[in-house]
Amino acid sequence: MYRLQTFGELMLTDATGNVVRYPAKGLQMMAYLHTRKDRVLSRPELASFLWADADAELAGLNLRKLISRIRGIDGDNVGVPLEITASSIRLVSTAVEADLQVMETTGSPLVKLDAISSLLQRGFLASMRPAAKSIEEWIARESATHRLILREALFEALPIAETANDFRILSGAGLYLLEREPTDEPVRAMLRQFPGGAGLKDGMERTVSAKLYPEPVRLISASVPLEMSVDREQSAPPRLVLLPPVAEGHAPALPLASALIEDVTIELCALRNISIVAPHTAEQIRRDSDKSTVVARHSIAYLLDTKLSGEGLYAQLVYFPTDEILWAGRFPMTPETLPIQRRLIAQRLTSSVAQELARNESARLRLEANAQAYHSYLIGSSLMGKLTLPHIRRARNAFKEALRHNQDFAPAFTGLSRTYTSEWLVTAQGDPELLRLAEANALKAIERDEWSAGGHRELGVTKLYLGDVDESVAALSLAEELSPHFADVIYSHADTLVHAGRPRDALSKIERAMSLNPISPDAYLWCAAGASYFIEQYEQTIAYVEAMKDKAPAHRIAAAACAMMGDRKRAQIYRQRANALNPVFDLEKWLAVVPFKEQWQKDLYREGLLQAGF
Image (cartoon, rainbow, N blue to C red; front, top):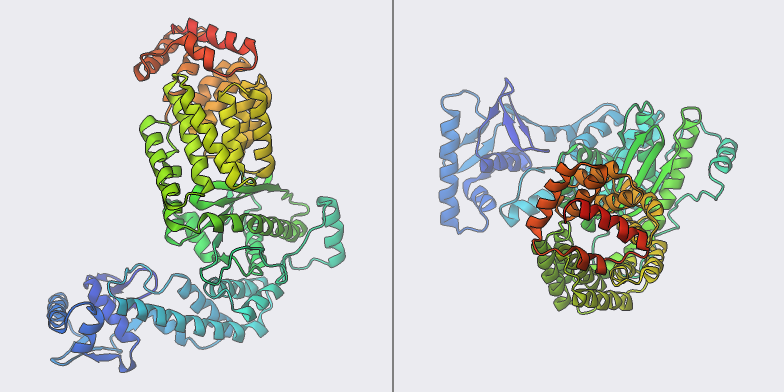
């Protein structure tokens, strides 16, 4: 007996479990035959299906070649999976069983539902890229049929569900269906009825809620849709995935924290303008070593990333295309009250996520209204991840390209402003024209979108380098007020506080930015190194520099820190590296343009650089 696997990776195995190396087209043909009446088709029908884009003669020739290869693999084996004649090809039912037969499972409705749901979560022919329109349409038709079977099994199992595990099976199937059919109101209503936090009494919940959360905890319901100013009828709703938590250190409450995220997933299904990725897919994404690629492949716009530590459950909402952290929070998970907290935290987390999505999504829709402009903008944003002159200038060209597609595209003006301030920093020549251009573009961004934190952030950064430290602090304070969980804004605010003579405040703020963005960009570490230098924590300065992937921008401050510690040998190494990158660096000229508000900062920096040999 052969086994044909059609969900996940398409493959054929023999009775001993060994993979039969049929060509991909041969396996597609077998899967197609399994879905046809009597599992038989004529040669012309199969050729037309497999090579729909070719003429009949070429398609027939391709099929004959495929049959020849299959016969070569089968050899003289008895009981081969395909019966091939001069006019037709038949899948031998007595020789082949397929995972698709799970759809015909009999017995307990819950067992049947679990089996079908587990199978469908892997995706019908998920590993295959359809080479013809006919194959793509067939996969879509079969997948729709599978969902109807799953839906029927779901409502058949619903009346007999009793245990927490029963409801987990039901919710997994329901979420899978709702992810693909967001307008299926009966499934949505069913999910909202499921108990979360079994055994809690209403009075007990209210008492603990008042103690843990003084503010009212609002449950999201179907009557609270996301408020969006752009019509979604013509486009698919954005997709949100809630990744199950990972543990940091000893975390015995991890299973309950994972159950909490499942609760939140079900709660969010009440929102009609967001598509929720089913928990099974979320688990696969969490396990994958290349999460970014998987998230992009599934067209996911938002991620709720979670981790559990001794301090509780930490959650952050990330907008994937720009890696922007929109919201973050930490929730207590003490063992004594965990069963009660689970439901309360689910409500609080759900409310917070939904409110943030409602606030953010209309802005995102405007941003994505022009696909070409948005594409160019994302290219520019990705290039700004590295503070090198070639990357900065390539990013600038991408932002200009975005403006050619949409001359009022505020994020592109924001990006342009950042390229000019970044070039001013990297070249260390004090070119005032770069700052003039940065300021002009920041103001254009604000003019087009005054409620976006990005424009105010870039204006604040530019004002800093122009020497207007107080104006810089004011602009960045407003940016942080507009987007209090935007890590990049908090970083820029911290950087300004360094130059404003408040390094301790700056270090506290940059540490918060790094907690929101734990795999921190080099710019964060560079800022933290500068703040540490001015509170004379020189070892800490070096540690932050050494943590940078590209240490080149921080060679000067590292050299100064080493010299202030008396480590002249390491100071010389850093100085030589800095000089190799910028052989025309002039210490006094640079200090004249660096916008330190307090003279003591310039004196301390000058002392370190002089001792390092600059």
